[in-house]
Amino acid sequence: MTSPRHSFSALTTDLYEVTMAYGYWKAGMSNHEAVFHVTFRENPFGGEFTIACGLATAIDFLQAFHFTEIEIDYLASQHGNDSKPLFDPAFLDYLRGLRLVCDIDAMPEGTLVFPNEALIRVCGPIIECQLMETALLTILNFQSLIATKAARVCLAAENEAVIEFGLRRAQGVDGGLSAARAAYIGGCAGTSNLQAGQRYRIPVSGTQAHSWIMFFETETEAFQTYAKAMPNNCVFLVDTYDSIEGVRHAIDVARQLRKDGHEMIGVRLDSGDRVALSIEARRMLDEAGFTNVKIVCSGDLDEYEIANMKQRGAKIDLWGVGTKLTTGWPDAALGGIYKLGAVRRPGTQWQYRIKLSNEPAKTSCPGSLQVRRFHQPDSRFIADAIYEIDHGVREPCEIVDIETKKETNIPAKTGYSDLLVPIFRRGELVYEAPNIEASREHARRQLSCAPPEILRLHNPAPYKIGLERSLHELRSELIARAKKQCSSTE
Image (tube, rainbow, N blue to C red; front, top):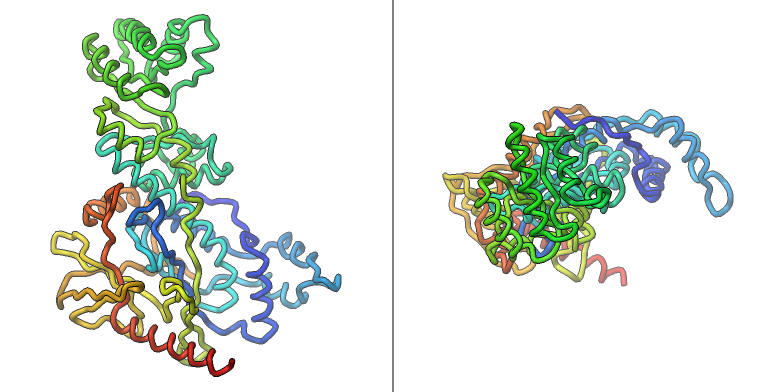
């Protein structure tokens, strides 16, 4: 099942997408076909992996794709520098009747993906392909970024639960929703965001803020009042005045709760030397007979801070991570791109296209691409080969690193999976998107099958990935041809 419907708009795009679509229509090319891929060039956060996320949201967008009368009227109101309408009324009529007929393949949410691999492949009429570019990028870029950040934070926390706490610092309300969804798929155990909990069925968590404690004359009164109101949800924030005194007061209230047939869930540390405080709080709680009470930690956390605190012996059971998770700190974006691989007129063969760059990694890959992941019998990853569908994969497989040209040989009959799966055929949805729990579990399994050295926070090793030999040769041929054409026109 896909996620509940968003309020999508065909105008979730940039103006230049529509002006290009108009250009194709004006030139009589609206029935020409193209192949595009969403890829990225670098893993975020200085790491060596990324988690694909956002497909279910993208499916909802694509299923709802159409131009409403209000949107058509808005486009009709746009003018060029001669003060005349920017678009021909006949083109707007064309957009009014436009419906998705593309073939789309994508990596399931939660799949580990690496630079230059396609998260999604779009094949169909050039105008449709062009109009969906911006929306696909904004959906997949952000959710993949946050799912990856969440995975890194959860890896640092090891077996301890992480709750996403970042709505108040998120990049807008919609950013907060998308971040909570992606963080859950990336491994977080829940969110503080009630709207995300309701919309995506993510477990929600939260108790009280400092303002609750400050409202009352004493900290003890604040804890007592809260315990009377919600005896089954008591996690006491203990650092408003003095954390150790706060733990003592929480223990006193917990004793009364126990007499009344309830148990305190935990105490939350939000400031100070939380390592030392957690160690002392654990001692106090255990000596008082509250060995099952959890110690929650929050306050400007990320994967590095959590790893450092654990190394120093922190006694933390649950981590509340906000700003640096929900905003994808310190990386502003994944940097995904949408590149053309091939074009054709109706009834003709595909013509490959390539974009050149002085930087080898920025030269695009031609054709219609697929990713083959080779794995051991126990499903552990060995290497990935990017290949062009019409050229297939030779056995034994040779992959060539895009930047270093280093070759890796994969023996014949090695187990593999092709990662992009059919999502739409001729505009009809043929894929049943897993629920969010299944996508979260898929991400967990993917991480468990990845080489451990690529998951390290510090000095991770790169994963073996490259172009399958046939694609490498095709790309090299097209580069040489394009350079020759450039030099002959100078």
